[in-house]
Length: 74
Image 1 (spheres, rainbow, N blue to C red):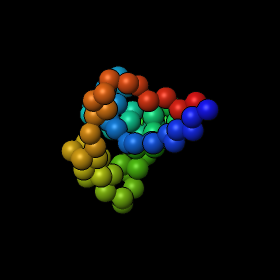
Image 2 (image 1 turned 135 degrees about the horizontal axis):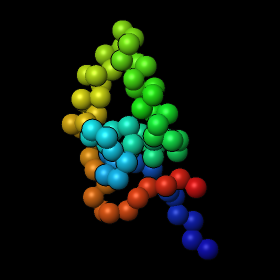
Image 3 (image 1 turned 45 degrees about the horizontal axis):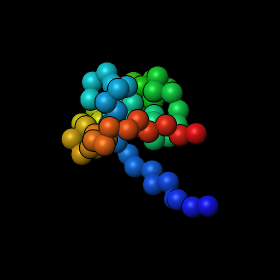
Image 4 (image 1 turned 180 degrees about the horizontal axis):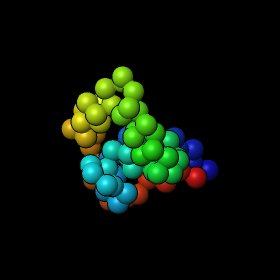
């Protein structure tokens, strides 16, 4: 038996995206529905937290998963 450590990385989603794929990528990383992440992001827009700036930074810094696989937590 081979014990392989699953390395979990944060990527922007290519298949579950509305704008840049940031919320879809975060949803895949945390294993939750992307609609929940999007709703949280919209609610945070109305708080003093600079949500839009954080989203822009993620959109620029987060890479796409270029190996062509879809990351799904089991």
